[in-house]
Length: 224
Image 1 (cartoon, one colour):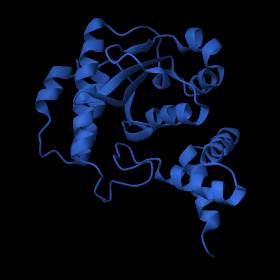
Image 2 (cartoon, one colour):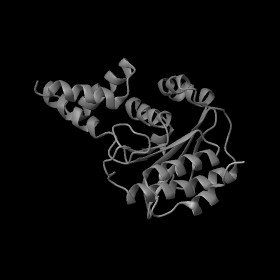
Image 3 (cartoon, rainbow, N blue to C red):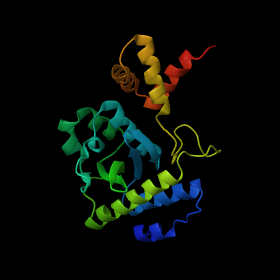
Image 4 (spheres, rainbow, N blue to C red):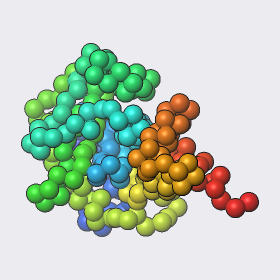
């Protein structure tokens, strides 16, 4: 039997280092019955427990599809307990990509900083089915705790454990996306919105991560 969410919330030390915070959050995800979790503030991915969590968030950003984009009610968790049944018609591209990752269910909690909703915490499972009432309730506690941890440790201090796409990083995961969008806008003479659409399209067509595609565009502009 794994640790309880409430026990984990009580166990996190204010002096925990990055690796301890990461292990704590992964344990929270598992205690909630989830394979992994990720936190986005605005449209920026700021924390993820594993590469699958990060990939799911990037897919929503690239495709403009997914449950995390439709959070409007600040008091409700968005549950998608069976991706194959519920998303195939509404978000066919996202559903197909999620299936490739062997994702069966998604759950999205609004993230609040004070009284303001600033983002989301998204958890995934590889088996279909809803969460229990207790898991849904305790997910709010984890979302609030993770938001607090992100703020306390923003931006991440550069270390051997940090880097592009590193698990648990809290620096700007998509900084290169914003830079590449500007490069494309200037190169092609199009608006930033259109440049971002083209960047997303290139990433989706190539099957590569959005940040990897952006990095290639930036590096092609560097002097040789």
